[in-house]
Image 1 (cartoon, rainbow, N blue to C red):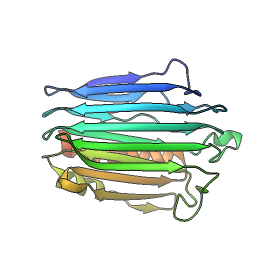
Image 2 (cartoon, helix red, strand yellow):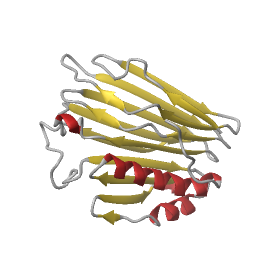
Image 3 (cartoon, helix red, strand yellow):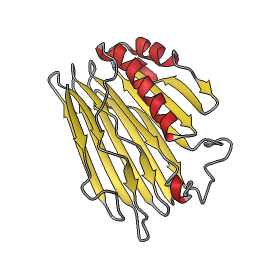
Length: 232
């Protein structure tokens, strides 16, 4: 399996940036893609930034797309559009972790806007669209029904259309669902193509641990190997 580390040479995402990332695995290819560090969203006083991610996986191929956390700094405004296009018989794991901001500077949900949208297509037909919009000034984030007392949120998709969706679901649900500093939930996606996992945590270390444990367990069901140690 090839391991690819994607690096933004500017060190952060700035006002007016328009970024596009296209990743494809074909003809039985297996690929792990991550970032070199967290994605920092700098303050944006005159506009916003946009990133588009396109992941394409053909039959017999496999992609892991596991970037480090997003850190939306105060006054940042960011849209992310992720398009996942799968053939039956392909597999994909994708995740994201969202930080509340630069906690060491006292920033807690001080950004202006964060919108994340993920669309999954199987065989060219849209199966699932997930949208999340955070605008703390319009709706406080740290309230019941949103994040409550938790600071970090995370999502993980494990997709295997035509594959072992039942085994993937059972592997994820074998994890502990609740602790003093976290909550974890697992849902089956329509069409028996895989699962979505949601995580809430009070610290980045707990959020990352839960995501890594989930990734490792579903990976065993998908390719027969646990998650490897990544050098960063």
